Amino acid sequence: MLKNPNIVIDLQVANWDILDSIYTTMISKNQPPDLLNTNVFSHFAYDGLLNDMNDILSPELRSKFYPDLMKLDQWDNKQYGVPYVSSNRKLYYNKELFREAGISKPPATWSELKQDSMKVKNTGKAHGFGVDLSDNEIQAYLSYFFLGAGGGWIKDGKWNINSPQNIEGLSFLKDMYTEGLSDPDPTVTTRDEKQRIVGDGKLSMMISGNYFTSVMPREFPGLQYGSGSIPVKDGVPPINFGVHDMLVSFKTDHTDKEAISKFLDYLYSDPIYTEIISREGFLPVTKDVGSQMSAANPLTKQNLTDLRTAQFYPVQQPEWQSIMDTARKMGDAVLHDHVSPKQALDQLQKFAEEKRLENTNKH
Image (cartoon, rainbow, N blue to C red; front, side):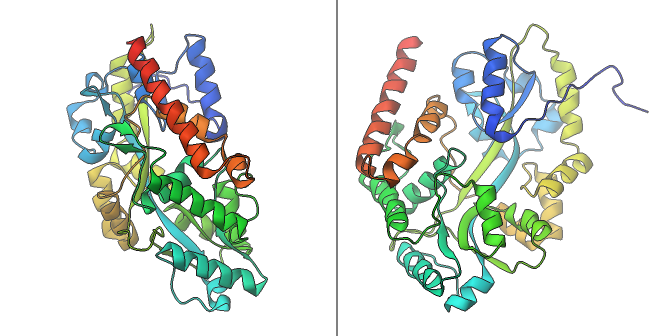
């Protein structure tokens, strides 16, 4: 018998590539969803569109989440989101291609990444390193190589996009492409497509989430793969990078906080949530499920340990969504010499500062 027969769930599933346009249209028509699975939230909170999840979550559910992930979804001292799934990013590589190229271990530094990509290229069988500057994942690769150069998006609470370190990181990615050491279509093929190219033996390595280890064996049962840390500039300490999605609740004229609370209790109940995480290959955001899955799988345990010290996107900055949207337009321009890496990041920095000023004046 159903526990909550009077609560009806209208589930709408959308491809991640078009999700932004769908919920933007819903919001513009003043018909936002009660709950949204997204990877951004603070611009909604800044505009006063979201419910405080502390007014919705049951005390039992609130205590289940990893505190560090809950903190990421806070803005202005309120809990405007709750973590839904997470992932830890690593370098994944095709072991067979590495063996044929005489590579014994995954590259840990940029110089090793260049050398190993050249070795693979020289076999004539595959491309070296998968670079994703597509609309889908450019913010991820910028993050890997900003941080890998010792930089980052934010410094002392201010946007720091055009720092010398970040310019060096983007310049390295451009050099990989110019020197023929990357895949030939960094702005065209998406992360999922590049993973399949790795599986087909035409690309030797790429950076992806831990779901690689769930998805790829299903699609390519014979694939021998390995993983390593995200390569960094020589002399820079290793980095961990994590990504998480969150659930947010919009203010509507029909918001039923009690019904939403009961649905979330169900969604995050250990059996249901474990099934979701296991099927999709993500990392759990609740402590009990994390402990259970860690006990069953040492790799999950290591990924969750790495996630505790990982750096994340600056999702608490209201300008982040607009900055991502703008960054998505610059991949081709940089790779094909329409602008230099410095010019591109100078422009993005200027946009970020103007957007922050606009937000400040608006409020």
